[in-house]
Length: 277
Image 1 (cartoon, helix red, strand yellow):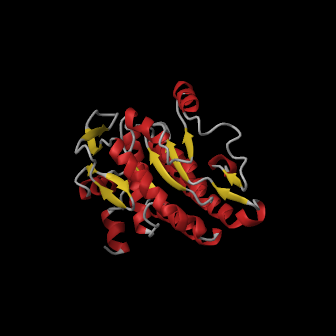
Image 2 (image 1 turned 135 degrees about the horizontal axis):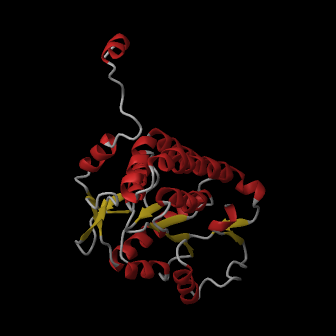
Image 3 (image 1 turned 45 degrees about the vertical axis):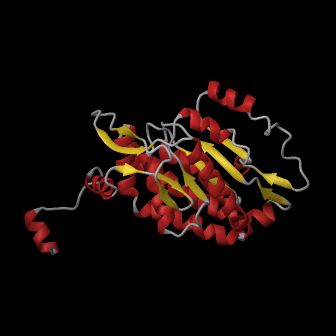
């Protein structure tokens, strides 16, 4: 349609609040999502799925995999396999991936904002004007840090495989807070979003495929609390990053004896996820 035709018909493009693009994305996936493990969509070992709903209506938006300990093991194994090559990259090369992820977030910001609001229930203004722009900014920011590691953190090295568990209130922004610094420092990640709000984390996993992030560097699993406990207590996980209730945090801290406060005083000092934030 020409500009003149638009002027006379007053037909404009969709507003940022239009759910059409987000709904089309859900339909392309048949409103069912598997685990994102090793750079691919993997059906859950349990063959079970659980719904995620629009809190404003109660209607089911999609079904997501209900993973179990077998899926946790697969995700951690994929992250471990990807770790040597990811750590061997220079900070400048890792930065290119983080910059690419930031640009993809900006490119798909409308869809991500609407999807966040539909899944979480927060106002579209908050998702559109605050959360999603900050997601892109965090990946840009930590891409810069990736390039400064050698000069600003000499003789440090990444922790390794990082298990991350995040809550429902800032789904994609919390995802960025956890994932961006971990990847910048050379860690690989297994992240579990809240089961109430998993969709934007899974949408981000698709962006990782689009920019060619090496398989296994980022793994996104959806699972129940029992499997989440298996993740944070997994013997092949090197660090746990958790945001949630104080009660659960204390349980994780008490049960994870391999992460005492002095655990990082090794031959070469290490960068924790929190160090770059």
